[in-house]
Picture 1 (tube, rainbow over the protein chains, first blue to last red):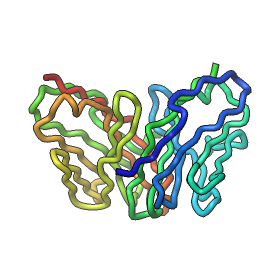
Picture 2 (picture 1 turned 30 degrees about the vertical axis):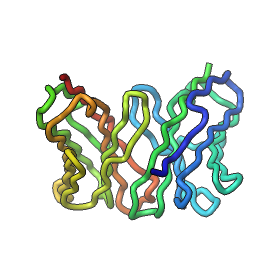
Picture 3 (picture 1 turned 30 degrees about the horizontal axis):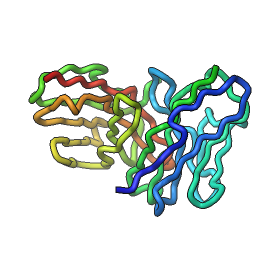
Picture 4 (picture 1 turned 90 degrees about the vertical axis):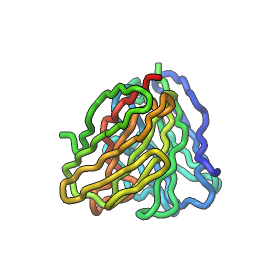
Length: 114
Length: 111
């Protein structure tokens, strides 16, 4: 069964460093999403992406964050200068359509900022 | 302000018991999702529903749009059902990505 994959599974970085989290959505899906979950808290929406542009973003998704689909298969989330509070589990998801289909989630990348 | 409330927060059951997890929401929605988060952190979509009832194996999800309430039922529970169950809603008029999540219900099924 097709699945969303994410790499790495765990990333440790120092404060101020740039990180890129990678996702490979399911191949026929058109809509892509990033979520994050700070330890012990609920999942929060970051951004949705369609047709090579951001379709919606939350207040969390500030100028430190960017997303890209560089090569037609990967979908990346970049954090330019990480802060301690960026430590969280980051989930990528994809769906076929915007409204009628379920989102399929990747296994997540645990980001630890020290 | 919590737009999505789940109850209970924690639930311990004996194997074989019938489980009910509740979700109430305060916004108008176009769809509601039930998700399962494994102890390792991964999230699996169980159901997406906008009306009525859906069944998949031992899992049943119902929604009452008028009452802004949904329930997830697990029949004949098993220790492998132990996980966090998360309710998430898509607000009416919102994009599909802008899911609003509940805090989750941690279920532990004892053998």
